[in-house]
Image 1 (cartoon, rainbow, N blue to C red):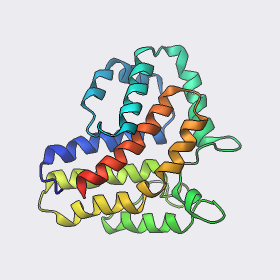
Image 2 (cartoon, one colour):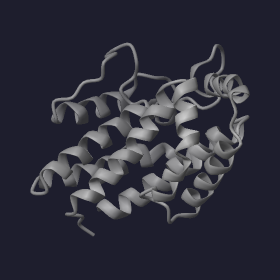
Image 3 (cartoon, rainbow, N blue to C red):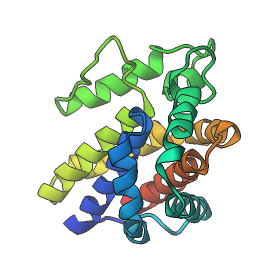
Image 4 (tube, rainbow, N blue to C red):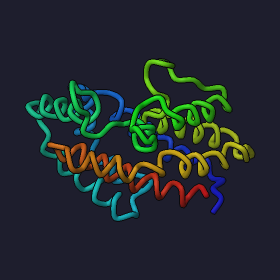
Length: 209
């Protein structure tokens, strides 16, 4: 199915922007309160059909409806436990960890992703310090591609890259990544993000292929 409606790309942009934000940045008071107050926007999520997406949306809606400021520190602790440390990371957010034999960062997958970004003139801010294949950066790249497709529906190379990149990169390791998130999350917020990420990537690939 080829999508030529710019609105569809704009909707996808919002989804990938969300994943970039919540997987890269620790939760902040203003962001979480704003998210709680606009929880109804989740009813307009662009990839709501899969079982994983439905589960993720339900978990997030229920969590946010009951969210208070007292939940902020446990949420930050959950974020650090999964993605930052100190010590063992329970859900490393880099593709190389899931694809390299020694499960280290800055592996072949990192270089492959970096080269995909460079095809469109992009480079991450913390080059050589933060691996390019962080799931948040891969979602940011998809955000960029969807923006380009929305602005120019004749950009066949961009539209093709969306589906191919999803298949080659985030969709190829999202199952193991989100399984670790779900198993090790102390809050339904990050469990919901995990289910929604898996479902949305699979749906996006089907839509944009």
